Amino acid sequence: MPLIVLLLFIGVPIAEIAVFIEVGGYLGPWPTIAIVIATAIAGTALLRWQGLQTLYRAQESLRQNQFPLAEIFDGLCLVFAGALLLTPGFITDGLGMLLFLPPFRMVLRRLAAHILSNRENVHVDMRGGAGSANGPPIIDGEFDEVRPQDDRGPPPLTPPQRPRG
Image (cartoon, rainbow, N blue to C red; front, side, top):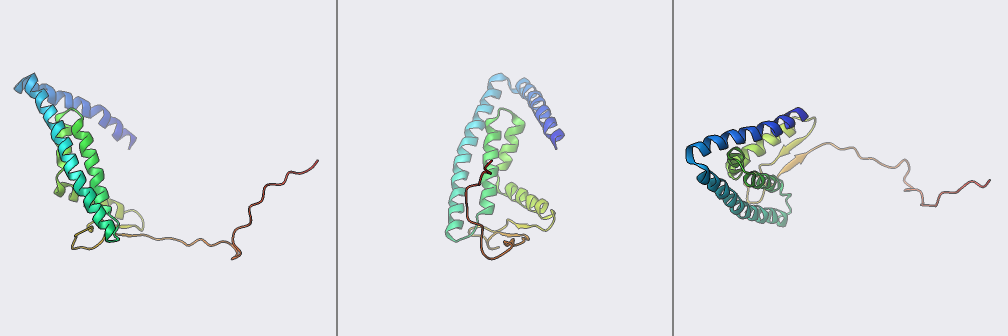
């Protein structure tokens, strides 16, 4: 995993520079810069609009006593999308715009649920949420109840005694 992160930190800027050179050579420098600024402005507007919608859906879920798991996932995707759109570059802008599309987020949500459900005895269902026909999100897991050795409760708190000597 650290190797993948290192390769991304090296590879993404190199790819972005190459795309900048190609687009700048085709369109010219000022239109290229204008496109980068326009995507940052559009990303900010989309983040605000979709972020508020996600917040309202999460509040509605909480009013219905449902945990807003899908809305939390969408919110994280939107924050990541906003960061990608504020980062100069065409590749990051494309990924950021994809994250603003609800069908793409739904595919990512299902993929994340599939990956998490393959881990030991965990089942994650993030299809639900406020207004969903599938009902509330379901998270299954196993637990062990830990009881004290006797039913008298914890020992009283007393300061430690120092030996005299």
